[in-house]
Amino acid sequence: MTHDSSDVADVAPGQPMIELHQISKWFEDFQALREVSLDVTSGERVVVCGPSGSGKSTMIRCINRLERHDSGRIVVDGIELTDDMKNITAVRREVGMVFQQFNLFPHLTVLDNLMLAPMKARKMSKKEARELAMLYLERVHIPEQAAKYPSQLSGGQQQRVAIARSLCMRPRIMLFDEPTSALDPEMIKEVLDTMVELAEDGMTMIVVTHEMGFARTVANNMVFMDAGEIVETAAPEVFFSSPESERTKTFLSQILIH
Picture 1 (tube, rainbow, N blue to C red):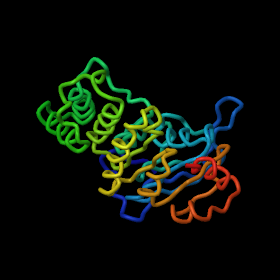
Picture 2: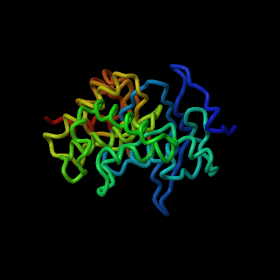
Picture 3: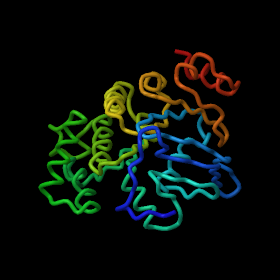
């Protein structure tokens, strides 16, 4: 069933907001995803971890159609992702994404970076977009940086601008693809703190990260991936204390050394 973006049904708490059914994805001869199935309910915070090349980023990039899945079904907020551009656009309107790299426009100020999408995609007036942009710069605790250019900010500040820019589209779901991996260690905490606040507000989130302290604090559900498969899913308290799979145990023993 397809939906026009105007008739997206409100998903009740506890109902799947994101549904992946047997998703497979190939890059030529390499199978990046092997029949991956996952449900994420409204307000749930899922942390995805696993070794490099395990399919984590590919999976979340399929959720807003940055990658096209080859088989299986993806339903986001009641809309099935097909080749229909109308559906893809409707899903992207609901889903914000933050990457390892900040992807800010270097020739625009912080404020202009935030105002651009609401004005173009949501047809907001300049005044409305400016008010919204300042609201979310306050939200990520850097309103004083509004007039600066990205090159004048630290990496942590740039990533918080990228989060604010996504929030300006008022998404119902946020996807984070290793948002702290490009940051210096002293800047990681400020970005994670911003994400913790979002989680506390009840945002539906999928976060690909190696930051296990953050995972323990924020996640409702841990997902461990390896070789393109979901090996194990569990609540954090179970996942960290008594994982079932040997592959999960090995991964955790390597990543939790300190």
